[in-house]
Length: 399
Length: 192
Image (cartoon, rainbow over all chains, first blue to last red; front, side):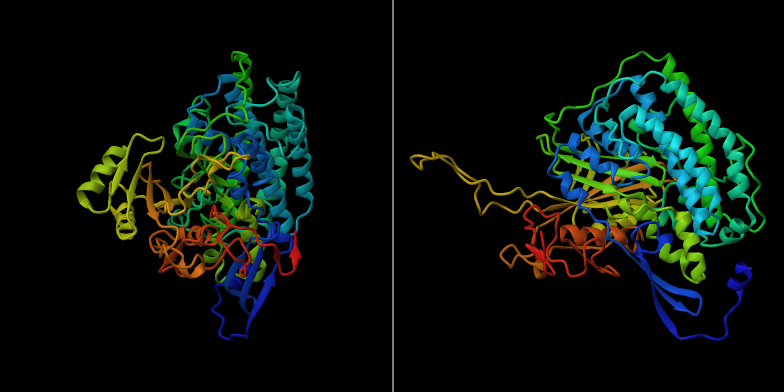
């Protein structure tokens, strides 16, 4: 229905209106404000206004040592704190030339993939919520709760973990019984995935509200610096776990997974996923959502591999660097594949234990910059659908 | 392509653009001038074996450090170690562009140096900010990054389509990521 309305050339124009959406609007996923210019129900132009959650993370990064800055990275993308910790830690490790032990590497992979699942579950559940389907969110929250319990077991914190530190991980080896709990979680999660597909991916209402809405071409996605599921939803097979810096890709070298992107019209065939609806176009909201669902499934398989590798590895855990560790002069930039996209940290050291500059490349920030282009000409009601499929976190946009 | 090949190609084709090439750093970089920045970026994006189609990040690093006062003997007032010269040369900003090519799978870092103030003897306020040419015409991704650099570090970009503050409020005074930034005592009567 919405799709047919969109293609009609409206012969009668109404008065232009400025509509203010947010910063308290629930479907803006935080404190984002959208200034919409509308012609009747059609969005002619829009301007995202941000900064309501600006907490000066980069300025703070110039006053504390890397060790002390890790808790601030938790609060960037607070739905995937482990991935934020990892990105910053790798950047500092690259600058200092530090390597971590094999067992530490497998633990890092496992907790990061767990957090990817948690983040994608929130993205999927909230997407359903934005489009008027409340129940799937509860299924998602239930699974995410189990992941948060696992995090609580390794580091005592559920969301602001500060677990991965430059140089290693905190609190030594995994606690007793964690591996078994994790195995149990993965099994339960894999059993729930078909339910989620049933309730969300192939849900007729969700397909109608997402298919052919907010179409993002691959060229535009690359030009605007869009990354992560937003880029892969446009059919670009680009995943930093395979294409990134050596310091990052070697973490995933011995893991088997396929990049969740449609290449030549077909998604990876490692599992039977729901069929693509006939009116979905590559690069639309539905495809971005679909990529996340595939990634969540693949992450569970990566965790299974990680558990096996963890059991076989030497029990040597790398300790984090000290607060007083001197950071060499020079600069290093590392991007990692966080759930929302490529998260980059640019660190500049000046020979003291405090960084001269810690610049953060936020994936949500770059993904949001294309929002204005892809939402021109859509209906006001499609705005939550497009924004939900871009999946931003304002803590990361505003830093 | 390896960094050495990229640098060689830039040197051959745009000899004036590469002021210096540092290849032994953690992340090797090419330093250019503000005058040849746009031509270099256009070349890097369009030339076939390079094709840097994605701009990841634009960041400004303030190289200035706060002045150190002379070290004195507290009893006699005798100067034990001299402090920094207040007239020391302007170290300026380093503006760093991180880019990569999805088509050819390589990355590059380009750096440009700009003074901290356009006119060294001019007033230290918003009328005297340094300027760089904008690359938002080459990569649309640069649009918001340059707005952020302007907002937080106070480097302006000429030919930018929409150079407004992005994270701080529109009426905020000063650029917080400058090392000599002084926090305002109050904002709209709100004190801290």
